[in-house]
Image 1 (cartoon, chains in turn brown, orange):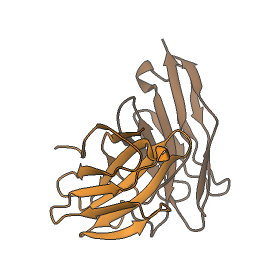
Image 2: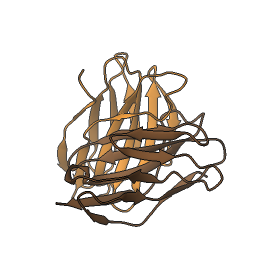
Image 3: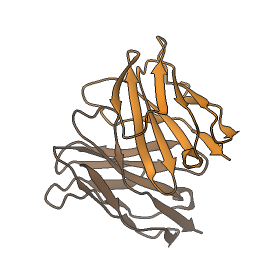
Length: 113
Length: 115
């Protein structure tokens, strides 16, 4: 079945540092890939998405590129802020799976001033 | 535009009891799905409803059930509660288009504690 693997966390960075959170996936078809973010005490919010190979999703300074050859969708940001502290989830959905997302374990990011 | 609203936000039950959670989707969103979030298992898909019909179901026992009403509001029910059912239950809605599969709008969740 489908699966998503994220780098082990938690991740602690200083403000303005470079962020990478690794995500790899296993899927039977041609999935769409997503990064969701969960701030403390809140539900998940869609951060960015990519629907086909070589697509780059971007939002709020975050970027991720759909790499079919390495089955990866790593999240990057050039300069993190304290307000980026949250849990980040990589996820995939197959073409016919509707609202059924397969999530990774989540990576807790803490950014210190 | 109002977001996804879940009630209650917090509740405490004892083993053997049952619980009903409610979700009001974003206006115009006809698909509602439910997820369970726990520290050990992460986020797991429970089921999806649209047009008052269950369209997809995750790998959960029959104690977990749901329904959707004609106004797209949804409820999920867990019967014969077990300690392991303690979790954050998240509802998500989606506006059905051919291209937005997986683009979900989540509520803040209902945190269930089973004692």
